[in-house]
Image 1 (cartoon, rainbow, N blue to C red):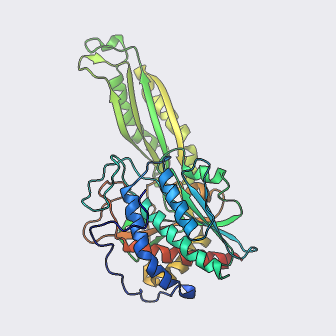
Image 2: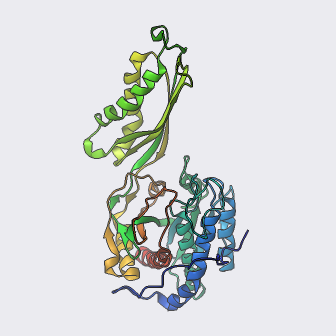
Image 3: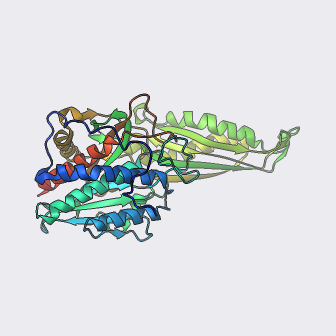
Length: 419
């Protein structure tokens, strides 16, 4: 594998570094100088990861890169049992608290159409959600905090979590938890790229910041038959049409309107011939909901409505409801830490309010065990922004330095507050 710190040829690394934001504070113990030296390498790392993406569950080379770079910084990272993720403790004062910082490392099954030197070299795989940025930021944080630990200025332990499989079910966060990733942790924090915010802005919110997200698959079967005689069989195409048009509307009538329940089918298939009623049909989609109580009730509601809608058709129904992730619900105390850290790292003007998203994030499973918070890191480029999960998604790379500053300040403030 090419060294993660080998600068890709062609194209500038990033826009010129901006002046320190008004009201921001320097990092302690002259870490600003070290960060300035590290930024070109971190950008090169991000570009290398973007060029060599790996799908969820297959992040073995990415994990090896992370393991190598942390080891070069004098740390002792350990691979997850499958070898596709990394946990690394930065040991400071032994009687201090443990704070965790999480970055996800997987990519999406999309082609990369961008005309850039760091375009994906892996057909059908692309970092279209910014996880390459998350990984690079956390590597930078590890390098700086390791320096503080070396000089005895880290007030506890900081655990870096480089998590696989955020984009699929079952979630990679559950693997991390099972591997002891939250052992002794008192608070956990994460960043997620937000192309709707410019560099230097951080979106913060107390309470739910994402939605719950589950997968729903409905398979229909029947005897099949001739389109001339639908009365002698079960018309699965008609049944499939009722499923995808009626069920989403009806389930929304079973819950409070402000729960934001949304079922959207992304796949529907039935038959191959114009004059043959098929014997199989299938639809699959995602159910998203904004509050935890409704999420708890959603499987029962969906099952009942699907049965009610399809009963008159005579189709045999097999419903697979795969629980995904609850909403990410930010703890007020953790948001207080992030707010102070943002003001210190980027100035008071860096703090931005952010709405609850209908997107899902498996960081929520960590918050089922310990308090914490997810922040949105501004990565917006000049000109029209491209949304997450679109293959042409890209970032303003100055966000990497901003993210490192923010997470270093967050770790230090969280340690101080938890003493």
